[in-house]
Image (tube, protein in one colour):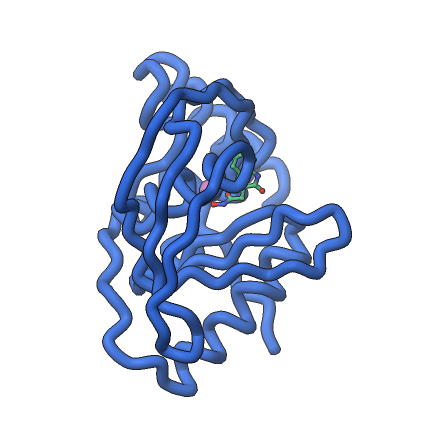
Length: 167
Ligand code: GNR
Ligand code: NI
């Protein structure tokens, strides 16, 4: 297992559009294990492959209190979306910044499982928000992209300053 470095805003690699997984190889399985380890260590409730500079449609999520309910989403697709929900979002690629973002409240998702089976399920509340946040990463979108240009430039400036201090 290995902890993977997480890209931080405004790294241009976070804008890369991820490619679908065509075959669940040993390499993909290792990526999933390493992403889970990285998410738990961060700690975070989700992680998209884009954030660790791998541009494949792979997501890991665990919104449980006990951190023992890992969800792996390969090639996720949203089949239906309804309602509206506002939640405070954060992102491991935008450390120490949080803001309210509007999302669909309920979604129907189709994924490929690690064993190569297609599965459909419904999600609402925090899980729904998290899936939408992670799926945005796969198309190169960050939650700060929904904020004003002014807010975004302030965030970029603050993160740059923070990084300078710790280097
Ligand atoms: O850890 C995370 N918390 C979170 C809180 C509200 C909405 C979305 C998230 S995802 C985030 C981890 C992350 O950056 N995933 O891409
Ligand atoms: Ni994120």
